[in-house]
Amino acid sequence: MRETDPALIDTLCAQAPFDALTDEMRARLAPDLDLVELAKGETLFAKGAALRGLYVVVSGAFDIQTGANDLVSHRGPGDIMGERGLLRDGTAQLTARTSEDARLILIPTAHFLDLMESCDGIARWFARARPTDPTDSGPYATGLTALQVSDLMAQHPVTCAPDTTITEVARLMRDHVISSVVVMENDRLAGIITAHDLTNKVLAEGLDGKITVAQVMTPDPVTIAPGQLGLDALMLLSELKVNHLPVAQAGRVVGMIGKTDLFRQQAATASHMVADIAHAEGAQDMAHVMERVPGLLAQLVQAGVKPASITRRITDITDAITRRLLRLAEARLGPPPVPYLWAACGSQGRREQTGISDQDNCLILDDAFVPESHDAYFAELAKFVSDGLDACGFFYCPGDMMATNPRWRQPRRVWRAYFAGWIAQPDNEAQMLASVMFDLRAIAGETALFENLQAEVLGQAKKNSIFVAHMISNALKHTVPLGLFRGFALIRSGEHKNTIDLKHSGVVPVVDLGRIYALLGSLEEAGTRDRIEGARASGVISDSGAHDLLDAYDLIAETRLRHQAAQIAGGHGPDNFMNPSDLSDLERNHLRDAFMVVKTMQSALGQSRGARG
Image: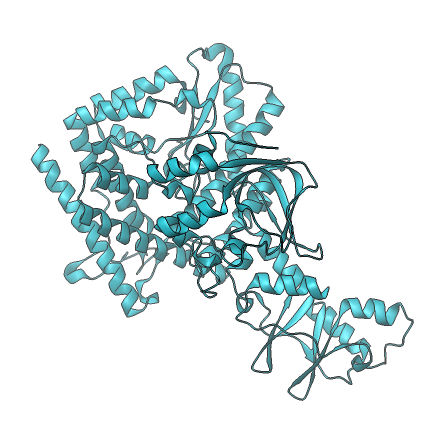
């Protein structure tokens, strides 16, 4: 069934990259969007068939298959399908079949191609799908469409000679915990033997373990080059109906890649994790999903995805866990006695989470809330969710800013009184609390409880010049790590000696600036980049100042994420403390320049505070 629905454009533009569309683009696109609904088992498009346009999954799940119906990957809510074919010859590169009932938004081909030409944000996002630039890793490229075979292969494959006995090869597989061995004759690739061969060609036929590998191996196997994509490897494996491929370059074997490794890598995507979370039966199931997040972060960094997209995807996983825990809590406790809204603040509220994070959350309850009758339910709900988040790696907030604290589990009227009090009497605690709560974002529940609250508070705050001055003063307490003569000011003692804190001395000063700009411009955006963009559009800061600050923020955030990705690759837990000596001279200079931009913008804000005073 297909229908035209004017609300489709709002659904589409609620997610990247379509949030980059201008009002004019939205108006031009909206009338021609289609809602496509499919039942489980239906085919959306088959490999080689002409594509009607670009598909955005709203709900449901898809199996992505080769023409031979071998599974390549999965797609779920938020995923986009068809762009590779549309930017090549207009035909589907793979087959998409529903694994459960699904709803999608269809953007007709002509509109998609027009957006690629007219919207820079769309063009950059889908750059990876263009056939003219096979090496580019654009913002949409993740998983097997972004990583090369060289990123995924085993770099030191186990080898044997053709005259090696089957028994010796079986021992090699056992001792190295592998399922394939490359057969080399001198320096030439002679064949490959797998555990599957041992089962089907030796044991099943009752052959003796003393026979040689040459008698049962696959001779002259197909190879793949290290520069090809992981998706190319998976498709080749499926077409050949084999599980392992030697990786060869200039006639020399340099690695081995297997289907199991590729499936594992493909599963480490935000959409797969969210889908797994949606079906989790408890916090432990979700904790197992969270174990894949470090790999996701490292994968996205390696693929060249922009920091804002990385932190957004990681936050999406946290949001999914929170919503699932709330559903499980309601299933255990029964329906809530009054409507509620679960909101997040801090980095989750701003959609800026990285590899490590605590939890900052609260409950906004309907004004019909009666503590004596209702609080026991919400106290238990908050405990269930916060304990579940902790089990998933989001440790309890050191400042106890969580819904488990009765102070942050209140009806809407109390929240309004909180903000009014903080604005009227801006002492140190009020500034801190207001700073955190200005980042509030609705996660689940009755969204009407949050509507207009933020706009009301921002309006009150902007009118109080004393409160604004205090907030600016508080924001300027976080300084960038620059010393005399533009040198880095390193931590001088303790566990993190000779490092800089890329969170509190790098990202946080820009977050603080963005929050103040939102206050001065009455901007309801929660994300730091969105706040800076909004400040530019509303004239709070100059166009050049916003441009420089966005570039600086992106570079600092990217440096932080690359640092965490390197730690993950080294088998360590991620943190925010980096030794600048780990960077090249050029990278250190760029980072110093970024810190200087932030320092300059802080100075300008401090001068504006003086002018207000």
